[in-house]
Image 1: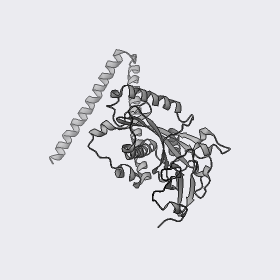
Image 2: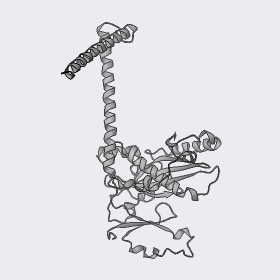
Image 3: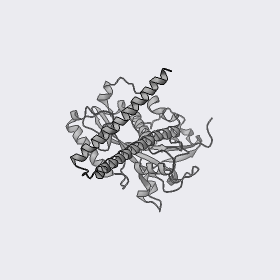
Image 4: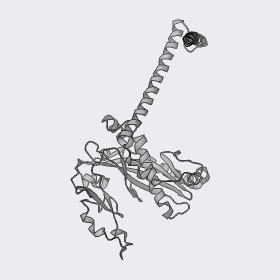
Length: 353
């Protein structure tokens, strides 16, 4: 049965800047859309809308809602070569209220947020690094959430969009297209795809290198279309500046793995993401601590070795110091070997009893 308190969001398929987007409680407002038979105006895109279930419990930053904008570059259509570029967060300036239908509360795009008197671009736009620091500092998620769970979910969403539509796209040799895709995170750290934009805008902020991204994009496009064979052997995960290859049609043609959207994307959020994110971070943090301790041990051993030379009045960087340290190491290993042999003798004696 339908949840009477469920919220729904309706948006036109054509538009930008949040124009025409409305929030609704219940589905009664959509009765006029129940008749799905083609109408005389079926080809008029202005009359078409998308109705989505509203994520009522989004993850908040300091009590404020946000969404995530990333970029997908279809750099080549013959063959398809598609790249992902990380983006940024767009944060609401006003506190989130799940019951409010005010656009500045539930729409996070810059157009509406900039109408608020306390709007500040650098507070509105957050880079991924700043977001990860917030998650770690406030114990919302582990130190690797962005690089593992979030980025993985986003790339699955990009592939889902691309592979769902690629057979219907008009393919022109020498063409390219940049898409902007929007995502949200709920309070259980699940990542949700919201929409794709065919003509995305760019946001200029100190937290996101827009100029660098645009420069790299055109460098990539020029090089790829002038010397395509140089790029044909790129595989998924290869980088060009900040752009990561997520799909190469030539590589896909050689793969025996069939793409299954139900496994690769649609069911991604059925897992307990908060629990998984915590486990991933624990593994990464343990590895980082191990590397840190190993580095400290190496530094300590180096200082001890230097002190041996100093105690023998030898220059630390000289050949005599080097020979002395080698002799010390041989002596140390000799003692260790004797202990091992002694324990081996004891073990053999005990085993024979």
